[in-house]
Image 1 (cartoon, rainbow over the protein chains, first blue to last red):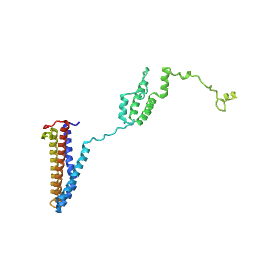
Image 2 (cartoon, rainbow over the protein chains, first blue to last red):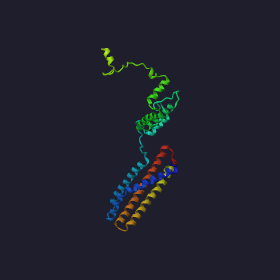
Image 3 (tube, rainbow over the protein chains, first blue to last red):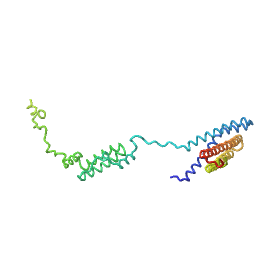
Image 4 (cartoon, chains in turn cyan, blue):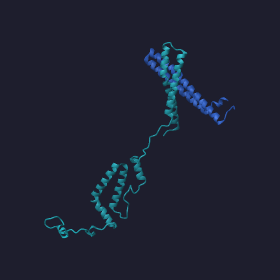
Length: 197
Length: 88
């Protein structure tokens, strides 16, 4: 944080540097003038053009560094695309979590599986906010955690649907095609094929 | 037109600031030239550096005069624009 004293010191330093830059820009003309002085060719018609050249160079240097010191510089451009960096994305996710960030809606069925799923989903959303690579890792980690803790993840989903009444148990689903007894030789369902002919 | 039309309070402040920093720059050049001449010893190069130093001092003084004059004219223009002249 800069105080007003710091700001005035900075301004004073800039003005001093402007004078130094103006003097330094006049050094080549000064060398030419001193060479003329050593050669005893110092006349008003030789000194005055050199003085004019030195003064114009000094004023030009002053103007150049004045613009450089006092004009506002161009700030760093913010990225216009959606890829704004992991921390911004993480802030967005944590600030306004939507259905896309947390895919699992907490239902009335509260069990350890659901709590674990919710935690994994939250972790996945945070990791997905960090990077695409993190998202891939999170999905792989989710599957590994579920498989490690509860076995097959598909069975857990099916069990949950069954408890919610959205899916019938497997043993009550009628068979669409009858399974015939395998006879000796021939392909499966050979008897069925024979009856249709 | 009185002298107060040329020298306002802001202008006096700028004038003092220019004087201080121009003096500091001149002293810096003189000190640097003296340091180099002392390191080189007497010779042609020292003579060239001495002549260059004088030329640079004249140029810096002219730059100072140009900017002080610009500040004075700026103050005068401000007074003309605001319509307040001390000796109208």
